[in-house]
Image 1: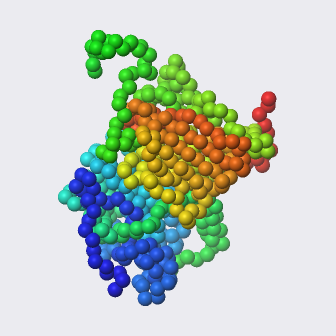
Image 2 (image 1 turned 180 degrees about the horizontal axis):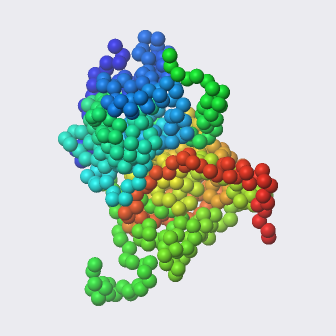
Image 3 (image 1 turned 45 degrees about the vertical axis):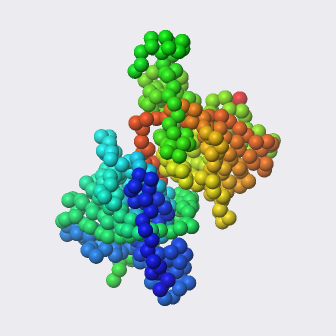
Length: 254
Length: 273
């Protein structure tokens, strides 16, 4: 089967650590170029291969365990979901936050690794993160969309600790809001040449009953480079959503 | 710190008293021997020190704590002393119209990427360079834009016009030379109204001359609007202890509405001679 080519060894950086450098696609399990791996149907698929699996929807969680929201919070998430994501912060060109930026499969992610820091650049909404290694969070954090990240190696896994979030992003699927207490722990483990296992723990005692753990993967996309994403250029969503709301369109899923 | 007496005796170097002329340090080198441009930098500045120290004068971006420090130049005058833009007469007129309109048509008022070299020399926000042997990444706090500059690569065949253009780099001795093409025509080069076409070709030269300073020399070519290449020489100054913050321009951007109202109210922007 074209998708199960032999796996190659993990490249290592000069300092001996697994090298995460490369251009990747989040929330995918398929190997190959971008075109090859996105040949099925669904948003982001080219539709050229009817036999290929459809790309998963970004609206719903594909996690094994649904987010463990407290009952009042779960209610709020459902309201947003039933409003078809009309209150999506990214409709306003705002940064998507973490881990949402990593698990949106529609646009590539570039990682550049050095011994002192790892930089992650996202084509989606054109955001970036600088992750200093073996550093402490600064004493003067102001709440931000992407949070503040520090990283360290645990064996072959890059562990990234993220705090200092504002409360204006979604964790991933539609309506998955959180508070400023959000604490995200990411684990990046390059399993072979083509694949990084991306495991995330999200803690937020204000909205969750317990930590939410998801397992995802990022797949190498050789030959892909990041393009521009000037979201503010002719952004029609806000006006369109406003009109829909004014016209009293019923979004509720029945 | 080494005592000045020792230095004077050993090297007969005159002691410099001005606060700005602290002894210069050697250029850090990367593992592959190249000068290392990695760090957080401030463009459009010539002053050494931390961000707070180097921006202590008055003017936009200065904290005003030191009235004796030079005032920060307005962004239209960065870098200081640059030659006037060699626009063709019809184009120069267009630039002046924009200038007289008080930059109400500034693309960055719409949160659009500022382009090259404007993003670098506006100087009000830090930029960060991360250098590896294969590529150099530049991150800009201003408008939260980034550039990935592959080393010793060709421009791709399938470039679409972009705000920040497409960059490829190579080393010429101690200088990183970056070639940028593939621009759209929606940015300003430097100051108010300095428009260009998709024919724009920018060549940047980054030379780290000591620990604190990168010489940033730029040539802009656009035969559609300029009479000849336009050059300037500027500097990027190291800002240790500074980290890039977020810049979510789209969050509560009041400029477009405000400018629209000013224009509708018929406010006269014209600068009187």
